[in-house]
Length: 134
Ligand SMILES: [Zn+2]
Image 1: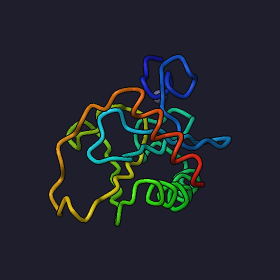
Image 2 (image 1 turned 120 degrees about the vertical axis):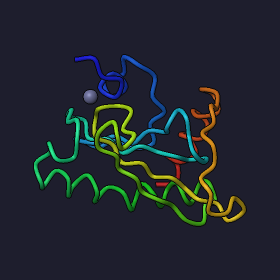
Image 3 (image 1 turned 45 degrees about the vertical axis):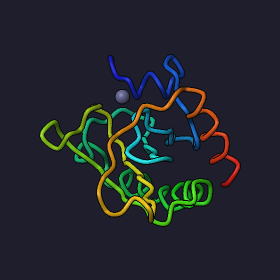
């Protein structure tokens, strides 16, 4: 199957991982809305959350607090937003279920910042820092 996230999970495409367990990974978004923007992704390919067994949805979301805490601790973000888009009209770009953890910074105010394109080195160093804060 042609899926960018499946490729990242199988390591055939570069990913900046901050977390992994048997059934999930979390990696930095390549086009972050804010520093530390992370995607939490089930390893098994489902397009939408409505395709997943209920208990897997519950387990996926149960991973979020500890991942968010490590991100907050590393980045100094004061808050975070969660987003989970299903379907093109909802701006789901990659058709593989993922939950966005978007750190928010006091100095940025409430507006969504523009997505940026950090270098691979920058993302690697961020990922290493966050991993050390679990
Ligand atoms: Zn996939």
